Image (tube, rainbow, N blue to C red):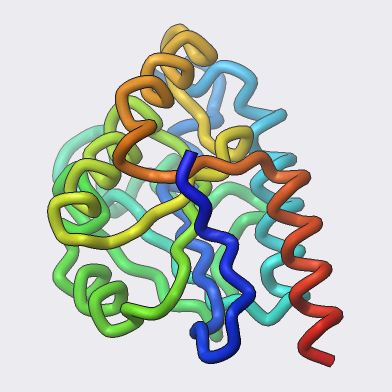
Amino acid sequence: MLSSLSMQAGTSRPWLLCVDLQREFTAPNRPLCAQDADGIVDVCKTVLNRARRADWRVAHIHTRRLGALFGKSSVFTRPIVGLEPWSSEPLYFRSGLSIFSSEEVLALVQGAQNSDFHVIGFSAGGSCLATIFSGFDLGIHLTLVDDAIGASGVGAATLEGIAEITAPLCATIGSADLIRYMERAHAEDR
């Protein structure tokens, strides 16, 4: 496992990238509803709230497409209750699979080269996987918060397969370890 938890002086504030924290992935009977969606939402809320308290930078990336899934007027395209972006946090839209299909997200990440990027959200088998491959090709180091990533379909089996495939391409960390790091780093900054 690669480590992204760098507490070296001169390192930019870390980023939390919130991917697809949209109701489409949590609404029962929707085609992309993740198994254990409520549990994933709870972990995402905890990580997001801790990142905000630790003064991390936070960006939200949502899928927006034409059609029934992720259409602009769909109630399911809206943010999950409790995981809405704050007015101080950028919200980017993309239509492609990887978050880097948004030119704004790509510019943000490339402009923050000395930062660590941690990813939470949904669509493990789609957006998250595509983002890992794209990020690796672009030389962008990502860390997945493995218990804050939801997958539709077979859920845990999907996440295990993704972890196996992506192990050489990105780091993973559990939310409890990440929160301990956030608290320690925030205390040292005071």
